[in-house]
Length: 377
Image 1 (cartoon, rainbow, N blue to C red):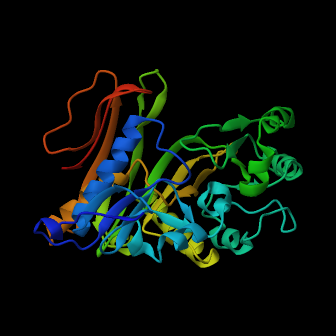
Image 2: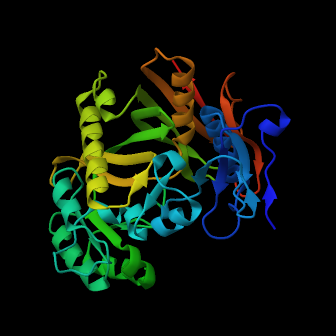
C-alpha cells in the first residue's frame, strides 16, 4: 500500500520536490561513515535545490513533486527509466547504457579491431582519445590479455587494472609474461568478459590530477586539483582528501583561470575525454563527472600525460563540489573558489570552524575517523 510523504507544504512551507538516496542492489553500505556521508550529501543537495530531503527512496511512498536521485553508484539506462530519471537534472551522478561504460575499460582501445568486446563497445572513442591517455589496451579475454602484454612489455613494465576495483585496489605491476600468468589466474572470468581488464604502461614519479564538472539545478562548477593520502586506522595508506580549484561554469571557465601548463594540459585532456564519452556512448547522462589524469615518466624516460579513468557517481571530491556550489549560490559575483575534503583516522585535529562535517566518530570497520569539507583561502 502506498504511503504519502509529509511535505513542507503540510507544515506551512512550500515543497518543490524531494531528494532521495538510491542504493543499487540490496542493502545499505557496509560501513557507517559512507552511509553517513551519503545522508549529509543528500541533505546539502536538498538545500541547494530548495527540495525536501526524504532519505532512502521507497517505491511504496507517494512523493509530492519531482524526485531528485542520489544513487550509490552509476546506474544503467533501463534502471534509470524505471525510476523516472530522464536527464542530468534528475540525479546527482550518472546513467550509462552498458555496465562497462561506467568503468576504466573505455579508456583504451582493444588490442586489435577484431578482438573480443561486449555489445555497445565504441572503437571511435579510442580514436578520439589518441595521445590523451596513457599507452595501453582493454581486453575481454585471457588470450587478448597475453597479446596486449607482449606488446606493452617491449616498452617496459605494465600495470594491470581490474576495472571494477576502486582506489587502486587489485592493481599490480607486471614485468614479465610469467608474472602476468600468475595475475591472470586470479581474475574473475565472468567479470572479464562483461567489463574487461586494463593493461597500460607503468609510469614513475606520477602526479595525478582530479578534473571534473558538477551540476545541481542551474549551478554548474568545474574544477582541478590533487588528492592526498593518509594512514588509516589499520596503518594502510588510503584516500585522505582532495584540494581543488573551482570555477563557476564549465571547462572553458576553468581554462580561463591562471593555471600552470601541466594543470592546463590535464584539464584539456579531461574535457576531451568528457566530450568523446558523450558522443560515443549514446544514452550517457551525468551531472557529476570526475576524471583522473596522470602525468609521469615511462620506462624510456619520456614524460607522459593521460586520462586514467572516469567517475560518474559520488566520490571523494563530492563534499568539496558541494561546498563550492554553496559558496557560488551565496555569492552571485564569486567566479572562483578553493575547496577541500579531508579524511583522517585515529588521533586527529578537530575540524575547523565552519567545516561541513560528513562523519565524526567511531566507525565499526575503520575505528575513530572524521570526514569534512570546507571552502578554504
